[in-house]
Image (cartoon, rainbow, N blue to C red):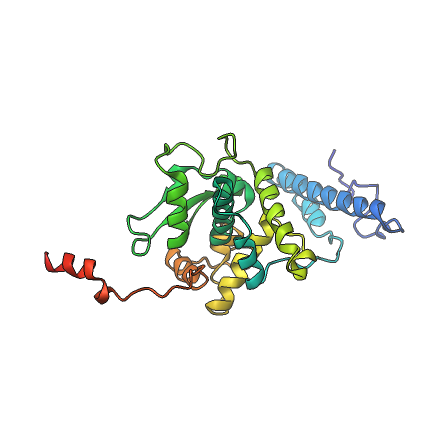
Length: 290
């Protein structure tokens, strides 16, 4: 029942009265209490919004509930990988085997797109738009994020070449990444895959051993790496890496062309300089026949 006397109806306290003290102590019980309080506060606010929409006479009461301050807690630093750590992670899979090649493509795809593990697990071959010539034609992939929101992410030429070898001639309705039994790779399998190769890297790089490396760590690596090599504008990144909407940080949204230009700056290179097109005898001979 909605109260009419100005009280919150939660624990019998008034909005203008003293706040309930937080249980003292530390450890697991305090963490559980904080999680419960945060969940309960969100539920109460959602209920207040629902009541306000359907019962305008209670708008004032609902507004009072919305003004209740949330408990401030310390936020952990967002973990990400440095460039040398990421390079070592990409070199960890044994590409001489089919499973190692698939693992490498998964890691490369995670870094290229900044996608969540669940988004990667649900990518189908039909979601890929692979250009005829990876180094010339623009390629992209459609990702299904939270709330079934779709977003398009550009792909590097190297990622396109690896994906083309991985999918082969399979049907468009099949998933891109499969396990050893030929079934779609799950988000739990992707987590295990990343953690397995991160353990190999941690044995060689002490800095990685101090981090909890997961698909979300790679997701948080994509955006700052691109930022550092492009410029310090916040117009990039959130449109493809953090969210389908840039609203949490900025009301502006990056265009697809801006995303592509940003990703080009942080593409994984082979280190071999490309031969100038004028020195390509096959290409020049073809042009002369036109």
